[in-house]
Length: 339
Image 1 (cartoon, helix red, strand yellow):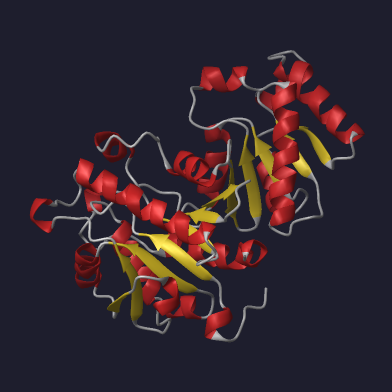
Image 2: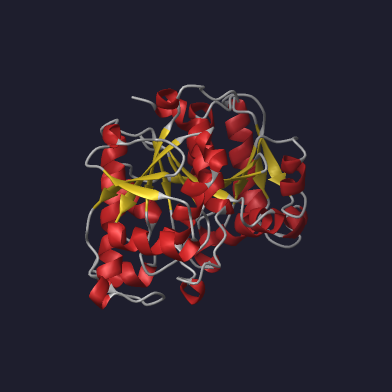
């Protein structure tokens, strides 16, 4: 992709700081200080100035904070961290690596503000940092994670999660449910619905050519019912009906080979039938560069796909690679979402 040459034309990406007690602020500081990002995007951070001051000190990032009320007021030059300061952390009661209601509420507030900026067209996309589910619960936030928050605040009933790493794209038929529940959710109707919506997400991102593959659920896709009949009863019929409707989709393809084939370019995407099936494939390939993209919403959201890493928070040990990659992908796909 050829990126815009003038600063004001580069995609403007909002980055909520994440749980203050985790590594989010550190990876944000390191990413914003990375000169490579200057050629890709403009970044506006949503967070707390006291915490970001700490993060800059801890990481040694060559940055000066510029507090703004609106992204349009930012100065998007090397060495400047533009910040919408929500001032919602009491440093006297703050500790790195600790679950707290204060930090859970703050993390939610940063996300909500970033979503508002995107929904009102003040930024082109949002790239999120790690939050902690226990901290959200402690703050009585009624959502388990990012996807649910984005769904609620954008009015999207069932957002789709797509992972992208080295050009391989993976969707997920099920997310945070038990493996037993995931197997029960592999139905013809659900697969048909998901493939159609996944195709819509791909087209929005500009991916209009190529074939989607459905991963098998059982070893060797069940060997025609020898060990497991989900493929025979649900997956094959779904694929046949989709093909009859004109969708370029194949499957089931054995999960031991489908991701490799997608990486080689045979398929433009894979529908993983349960959470860990696709997570293992992508993260084993490149853990740091596996980026989550939430689709089916009126705005674009990319995200690092690692946690708050409370054990190393405040120690300058967290790598910014995933944060930089999340912003890069947001900048790549943002033009399709500009208002």
